[in-house]
Amino acid sequence: MMAEKLKRLTFDLGPNEASGLESFHNQRVLADRNWDVAFWTVLDDVSVHEAIGVLGHRDGEPLDRGWEAERLPATLPEPQDETGDAEAVSHHAGWIYIFGSHFGSKDGPLQRKRQFIARFSEGEVAAAFAGSPIALQVRQTGLQDGLHRVINDALREHDVDLCQPGPLVRQAFCQTDDGTPADMRPSQGDQPINIEGADFLSDGAAFVGLRWPVAADGRPIVVVLQGMPEWVADGDPPQASAVHLLDAIGDNGSLAGVRDLAIAGGRLHVVTGNIDSRDKRSHQITSALLKDHPEGADTVSTHFRCELPPTDRDTESDAESVRAFPDLPRIEGIAVEFGQVFYVSDEDDGVDMRFTNFVIASPDQ
Image 1 (cartoon, one colour):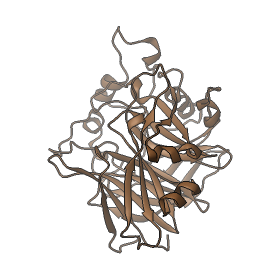
Image 2 (cartoon, rainbow, N blue to C red; image 1 turned 60 degrees about the vertical axis):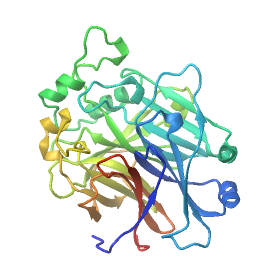
Image 3 (cartoon, rainbow, N blue to C red; image 1 turned 135 degrees about the vertical axis):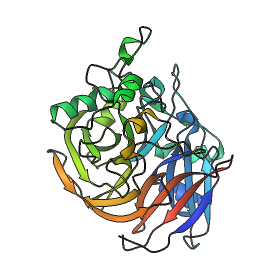
Image 4 (spheres, helix red, strand yellow; image 1 turned 90 degrees about the vertical axis):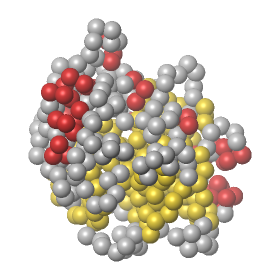
């Protein structure tokens, strides 16, 4: 495990609830902005059209200086229901994809606004820096016609032994009242799904990391989905081709969920950590999930890496610990660029100032 001191940079993207990290590929914009590298990030407590941020580094500056941060305007298609809780950002074939968590608030229920995938063309973002909004495509679903259904069915069909919801989770997330629309009613035996990481292979296969559920022995789960780009473009739902259990549980806990993941150099890099967060101000356990499973409350955020698992069969993959973050429980983004690993974390000073930490690791990773 790497132990050197990490460099820290602070950005203001207000409201600064940063989640996910993805390399910026548009060479025209990089040249126009005089950036040698840049990253997409998303903000999780606003609508998806308000959630798009870019972190860019000025060419020729040392990596610990010369960074700029911007939020880019975007528009939603009409009509469009409310969206929120963007948790992962990834790139495929010229498109930037933003994944909603597909979860709910800490005490439930599952919410339609979080059941979405959005995308936009990275080739069209140059005008956004001059104020012209990005045009978003959004695939928003209920529980029965989207990733909640696809992933729950996959976990059953691939015979994954899951950590079972406790009584509070069942009441908060798996039961509905008489006024709940039919497509927002979980099926018998469904687990609430919390997506927090995603990345694509060049052929369109999507590796999707779950913060919940986890395996019965606490290991985090990555599901491989085929047909995601076609589905977002209004095609048929994706199909799961593999489910992987990762030996990637950090210290101080026996359950670990995925916080983000990235594919680089034939390896899967994944940050895992607690299965839900404590209250930011009081640090108390307030979520139904943690009350049922306190053994997943304090799992140390840790970067693991392993050989890229296959897309056509299930595996149980050993993972090597790269770096632990015992004092940063909210590492929510990872990207590999310039032969280095970049992390973004969602931090809060406990009062009213929130900021994004961008941490640079050593070049041998």
